[in-house]
Image (cartoon, rainbow over all chains, first blue to last red; front, side, top):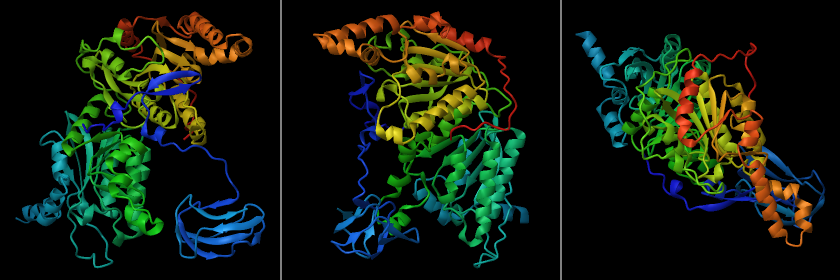
Length: 110
Length: 507
């Protein structure tokens, strides 16, 4: 049997459930869980990994909700990424040709 | 003679060089695997002389022995099994149409004859030269995996790469076995991930044995070498029946080992941990417990044991991990196991010590409602004998979900340490006496008082026993006796349900 690394002998920790504090071990998955953050419409984040093909906007430009900001090529599809709100382009974090990851911020409005 | 010449040529698979390569990777050949797995001299091979029919890309005239897969029947501990083993030494074990047809033929046999099917996967994937015919082959296998589900046990053994569409045959089967450093499963490999996404990841980190045993839950059994893997398969087959019309073979009854003292496993304080597997070993024949999904979603424990020689499936909350809560993964794990037991006439014993569901935005957003519902569905749907033992905490929704009387448990026993209540004393006191605690000159002392009061009144098995939700409050040392008797009297249990095509479980 393969050894369980530290899994089965993890140190005891505390876990609160409905007011009671339990002594127990925690799993890797539990420890790695991401804290929830509210969605910020000013930050345009990448939803699928791919490449930036084209930028439609420049820093300082005013954009309206629904206006295309850039083209993200992913899974052989060219996707227009649009503004979720009216605002001005504050920063652009990518250039045409950039390879981008899921979750990476591409552009910020204010 | 022509016969011997032809046969010898085919039996040597991909030839000396390819076999040397296979051995250098730490892998046995397909033929050696079958020999090691089955009872000696029991293997009978079919379709050795099958040839591919591809005429494109210079494939005409290319001889692929057995078309890269060995199929046949044999026995394991005297029980019949159907086996196929992909031969990586022949065209990388790639799957062409005739290769697939050999597999589907042996699958059809397994279903007709009512014997378990064991598939040994070691293949580079689709045989590109055969184009859509190769895809047809996969589809025909998936279709049969689905139709055979619940009729015969289907075991998948991943002893090499199993990538792309190929992964879905194992995923459709009942038990998947993986071996460290040998098994690799993924939909898109590291190469594609690097070129398309720019992310560097090794094959092992992406879809190695440990990943599937610990993280994804795709694999049920993890071992460190092929021979250990074959032992696990034999162990499993000793517990489960050949097909859905039979019961598991009984074994000679054996008492549990004295080192597991059932009276001294559970700490009296309900917030202290212990290993629920010690309770299982304290009641099981010879203290033998075959754990399934040992490394994944460890806050619930599932597996097989024998009671007085009869196989039973056990589902137990594990207070040692995440306090034994139910969450997305543990619900999936338990539900699937329950459905396997129900399909194959294996009685279920449920050991309850659950504080509730795991709180958190991540759980809610991961769909703990939908996943948690699977446990309710699986327990309610099951018509095999269902016996529940409440060891300690049984709070709220967790109490209902863990095969309570209300989901159709046939027998519900509780230890004197059981606390069957809508929630634990701390949570309940905080709600019921909120204003009283807040307005008290000493809120801390008042909370303590009310927690103790609630605990005294409700954190016990007697309220539920008074209502008939619990059939008997028993001392821990009587547990095995009560379980054996319950299994004995439920031997002829029959529970009729209205006829339907099938239910719609919350997949």
